[in-house]
Amino acid sequence: MKIAQRMFAIMMIALTASVFAYALDANPLVIAGALTVFSLIVPRPQGVLNFSVLFDLARPEAETAGSGGGIKSEIILIHESDVESPFPVRGIGPDAALISGDILMKTGKFMHRFYMTQGTIKPSEKILKGSNQDCGGWQVSLEGFYPGIEKAVQAWKAQFGISFKGYIIIQNCSEGKRYLIGEPCNLAHIDNIDTTWGEEVDKEKGSKFTFTSKQGNPMAIYEGAIVYDPASPSW
Image (cartoon, rainbow, N blue to C red; front, side, top):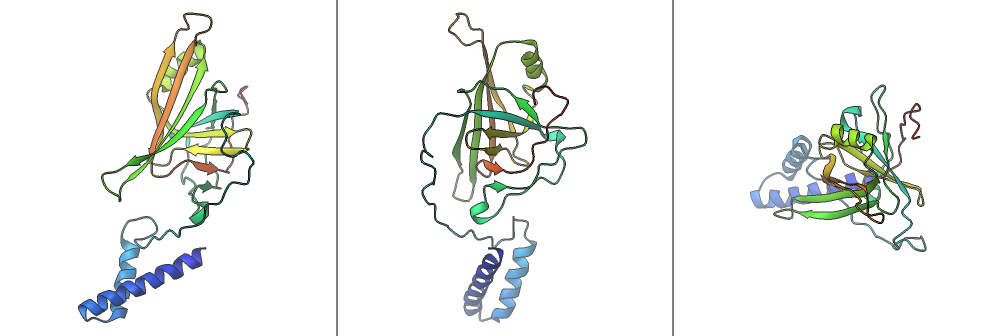
């Protein structure tokens, strides 16, 4: 894949150099060399000539891939200050959503479970439109309900309800996949906490948490390790 992309980039450089050489009556080799150097020194991911090759998107093999329901998931939060550099990068091409490397944690730091009632967990994605076609991104959100107004959840809200910034892993039990929200410099944060008292027996008593990340890519599929605290009873 990388060799094919490089060959394609070289062809595009040669074609662009030929056009400029014809228009400026200059040596095409000089123009090609200048374009190559320019593509390497300009601070843009993978150089200026960063071409994505369109690929087919076939029907999923699963029988009911598009059906809802059955979302039995657990939520894992990772605080930004607990993460060690470098952060694992996504693949390229058809693997652009895949992170196969491990998220490295600092010594003595762990990923943490965050309970949400099954059936209330709702991740969502939508495109953030920019002012033109060269800007924009994705808004990725996670919503879920934590039951009860107990000391533990009130203490969590008091310490992290406003200040939490980091990453979220949604571990989908039925599919065996892990989805990652947040990316370096575009972290997930708490957008809203709505606590209800449950004034009647059939009313909700607890807090609806909404996490949001405005990021450059949709959710990643994370295949790295989960670093849990062996001393925590929640694991």
